[in-house]
Image (cartoon, rainbow, N blue to C red; front, side):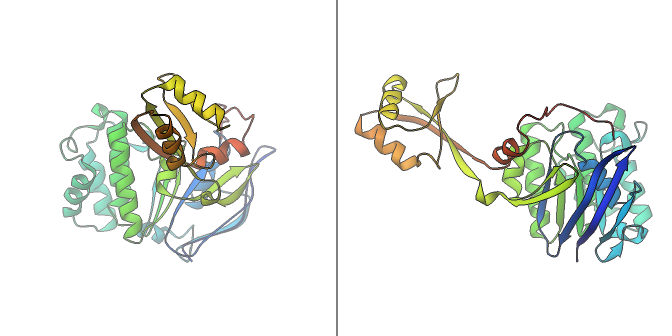
Length: 299
């Protein structure tokens, strides 16, 4: 058993933040934790890694009690950048981990090259941007080649290019046999990483496969927008138009080929077609409709 969490309960004052959480992972996979701010995602990860005491329940990681410090030879947990020391360099952080875990220092070059931070790894962290700090945190948690990787908002502060790079690394780690549990507000990136999502709501986890709700959303530019809208309205097709004049529709309402056929029949040219998979966002809106996504609860 890779992860075995049973009836985990955690209370702050009189409020149950986690109220009977169960997680069972038996084979390598990528799992996403999704929920509004204050729903308990970080609390759950902190409890699992023995950084926070809980009221009831049992946690085992890789077959060992979560209180067994030896698990951290094979388990890593990426927290936020408050754990970093501004006066030290990135290299200092990585060297410390290597010394503590008896990892060859040659691993530092391997990891920093893989992440793309070799050019600044010897600069002091106080001079790092938010994205550079996220890169360092990622380097720190993969340097020991973990079998289980827990990530709290790993994509926070990353520009699009860096986010793509990190996603690529996480998918590679999964293919190499690493189980990954990550929390994220970036629902687009979650859709690109996994269909297995634990929605955190009312103190419990709702495990779902987004394959059941996932769909492709198309953004299409055409030669004659007004005529295209008339054609789609005549066909009673559900669609939207962006501020930049792109027609937007989901394949559950209209297949791309049907759209093309409609346009060709009326001599309307397709100038550009983009698409993206939507699943996590759709289900999130269904579960948390009316929830203030920016509400923050101090946990």
